Length: 325
Ligand code: DP6
Image (cartoon, rainbow, N blue to C red; front, top):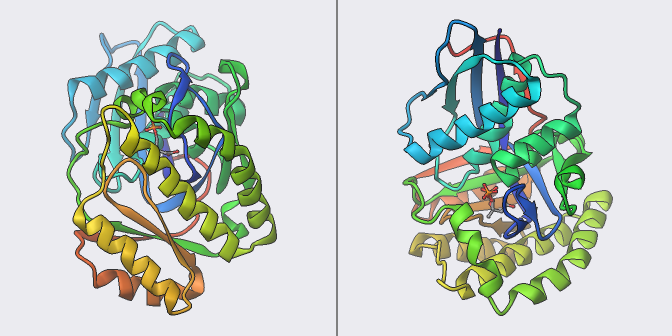
């Protein structure tokens, strides 16, 4: 049985930074994200009684032993749920390079989970798929449902899952990703968030998050872009304040990151509603309304960058009929 899935990466507007339970990747807080069109993963999984071991490959990308083992662990988990004794061949292709902070582990584990479940003939609801994707990489659960997605933190494997709040067609906004560095980050998200509780700001962050999430959901409901943007930008700074004050301190930004952040502020002084958010890397996602795409893109081209990627809201992870092998 051979199955192929596509899943989009997502950009978080309320961030996941820290696990209260490592094994099941149960986060401290709920998070909210949007799937983005330009960054996606395609994965083909073939399950066959003729294979004598799992074979994992990436097209156009280097992969470390630990990455391969993480993929193998996910395949193993799905195989044991399906109760099928067969091995699998897995081939993966990313639309943009891994490690540039465009959440390839999210799209990667979402695509792998969907393709492998189908190839092992495991019938799962969307909610179940999000729970299994979460075991591969936390943010991967948010790449399974459509569009604007909420991950309920929960307290156990059973109640930590993601669901769509609004489909990708709900709101014409865009995410201009300013890639200032396209090499792999030095501290992975998994390692980075290990130290989260050492930040003196972390408890305060947790206390303030429910209200911030509520306000963001309301601004989404009202399609109030000004409030939406202010909240998502201050949330990003809040998470980075925690990162910076952890032990050891994490500084993911580069000079060009700060230049991009300043350019976004300059745009706002000119009346253009553009807002910045950054994950665990130096690259800046600039969120704006579709009507302002050209002007924001022009402004961001003037800061030092390796690549500019324009993203639109994207749909759910899905099976496709074109296989990679
Ligand atoms: C900063 O999902 O990559 O992008 O569960 O350890 O694989 P693991 O972490 P991961 O963390 C993403 C962190 C973030 C914020 C976010 O996407 O919410």
